[in-house]
Length: 190
Length: 327
Image (cartoon, rainbow over the protein chains, first blue to last red):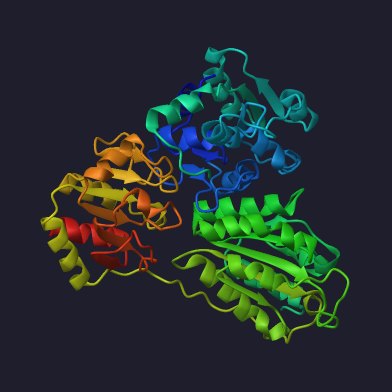
């Protein structure tokens, strides 16, 4: 799916006071730029440090801080697996929220910068487990997006599920190069 | 009646209003973990201390109260570093507590000993080693006060294994809490800012996370509407000005020249509300260093060659904006 469409669907599924945590990477490029935000502290990013790996475990802290808000962790497939073991913590502690993984099987932001500056990339591609089976093996729910118009209803469903729900959504990052070509030079990674 | 350092620590944390501690127990803090069983504080056991530090980080970010993470000495404590650093660099209140080797052997090369306070020093506002039981109430209070007062950030305490199981005198209590309250900025600062604004032709507002921490959203909306000045936010400050408002320019911060940057190119006066240099490099909004900057924050600005202030306003952001609107 193209990134702007994913961002739009997330906005449709989330209420004004619901909270999205956005991990660091190409996913953050799109969410930080495009996700319309109406209340402070409802789109949480790692800004000063711009670290990966915080959004998924951070969602547990966010839900305990704001139990009446819906919580969505938005991660790349790299960032998610860095602290995915906390799925066990969330299930055991009954801390429920949804997770949307943007699947591109690579360190997408690094690949973007390599392609932009060097014209090619290396050492950034990997594979993933079956995220649905992975989620289910922890006793969580897993969803796989195989059609664009299924994302929004599945997001709404996952946010209403009374468990931890993981959605794996393939993302088309060919948009990345088009974006930087339109805007000019990308000066720094985050 | 408290009788051990471990129980006193729990009492001090309860006194600070702590509801959750995220962490993993170790052999060196079993008394602390045990004392939590009788506490109102819920210990959330995790699978990696790094995750605990991120949970505390997000909790602190959302509540304004320090998120608390706990680990054992050595490797456990080191695993807390990333979330502690994230809180430090994003101005989030967080207190990390870990065990440490006992004072009986800390002075020499010894099993599992690393100098933890010095590892945490560059990424905390305050860090300390509890060297005697009597020190505990003051050190815990200091950790929370530093973590929560502007500019918020991470603090770290190390508790040696032998200290943890010592007794304390019967009448040792947590310290009472003094909340640092923000106050109105000085009238002279407001007057100087009014002079700059009255002569501005194309002012623009940049709102950062400091405005979110100060609950300045409503004051910011009124200010923008009253003076009809457009507002961009940093990524960290997203939502402090609603993106569906007609004056909203959206978020800016990483592309050298995004659509929103055109507004900053045209601007002669930048009104920076709750913006910290950590959020992004000011060269992006002030490439020639020649724009007039009015800085509104709870503390004075840091130094940057592209962030030379025309006026700095220090105090409550909401009150500053209301005063400026009125004049």
